[in-house]
Image 1 (tube, rainbow, N blue to C red):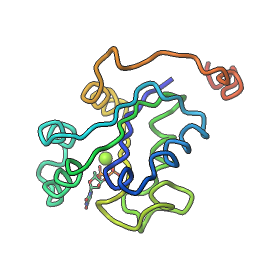
Image 2: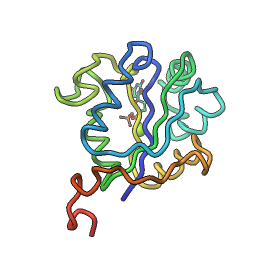
Image 3: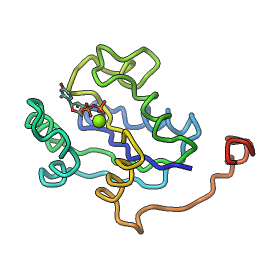
Image 4: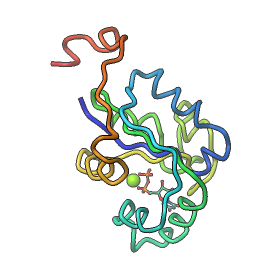
Length: 154
Ligand code: UDP
Ligand code: MG
């Protein structure tokens, strides 16, 4: 089992896409283990996007991400990081394949609806940044044994 940090960005929230985006992850079999609706401040975003600090798009990215509320999720599943990144699609909506979240819902570059951790190290760091330990909830979905077979979980 792996966990990943997902953010439905301000454009996704403003456009009323929270339910449809979260629904895709639920449909796929991913389990919500953390969920917070909040506005992000610039200091938290500076930590979150520290790897991009020197990039030309950084300032605009922080402005966009702090302008309006976001939905932050921690999702759990087998290979959750890879599965979620595939479901998100390529970074820019115009490049993202149909069938992906970015490909189906957006055409913008920076307004690309969703963030997802890109490695186990990033996921651990990002979940720690956005959630307190007691906000991550361990639970067993009733359908769990019909989502994964024994080999998936081995
Ligand atoms: N971004 C941007 N312009 C760029 C590259 C990235 O506005 O030229 C934004 C975009 O919102 C993206 C975020 O910066 O999601 C982080 O970039 P990254 O390369 O990590 O893309 P991701 O992992 O989100 O696909
Ligand atoms: Mg990234």
